[in-house]
Length: 343
Image (tube, rainbow, N blue to C red):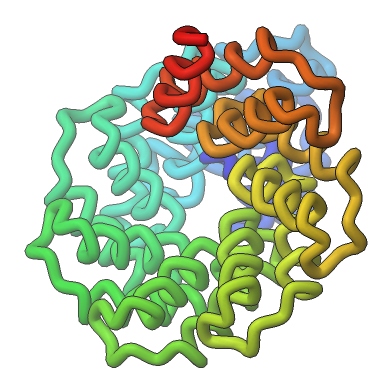
């Protein structure tokens, strides 16, 4: 998710609306506007900044646009303008990228209660961008935004309580904030909350609720949730075992590039579980996962080349894949590699 979602022009449009500019003020010619701007008239200063930004009746000049915008609202305490200016500095939009200035302007807006700025400055303290890294301040700002109903901040705060970052670790509070976020359809929160219900962390274990939350995330396209749900249907965990549904969810995740799901789907095609047996498709999915560095897929692919299962037997290629599985920490790959070497 981009830090600063909207374009500079769209933000300026919001500022103009917020300032309740009159039609007559917007109809001023350039000289009249410049005169009023030099007298400290904030709407005129902003409009002048717009003209410089767009090159409307004047030579386009990002520096002058920024200068007048800062005079117009940001320096006069408008929180939305301060937030926008922080975003410009963060992304280098019309100005040279400067995280220190980005943090400065975001914090000004955050101190006035701007929820977007509170979320972003919390992230900057968390990552140490433009400010000294401080998990406690990150949590403090995210809590302010979370209390205003921001779902991303609620998710971030829940994760902080889960991991004990900037706050004392507290699974119950983690679950509380994650559920607030999940109820706003935050897909990441839905997945984590489902996992907590599955494991009984911070909440009473409830496999049905776990399944519900994970399925909500999967339905919204979360690749990790889709893979998890596929595994649940395969093993009959929280749901009635259903290989067809397991294959369906694994395929959704596999098509998004999830290597574990690709491996599982390949194995299901190989064994004809939930799908018609198709060794060729099995090999295709296993190869995709193996090429992403999945050690289990590399081991299976090595075995397929070794045995000639689904492809022409090739001991040298089998050895290569066993070696890759070994390099990725799978002992069975090391054993098979050694076995071939000793022949």
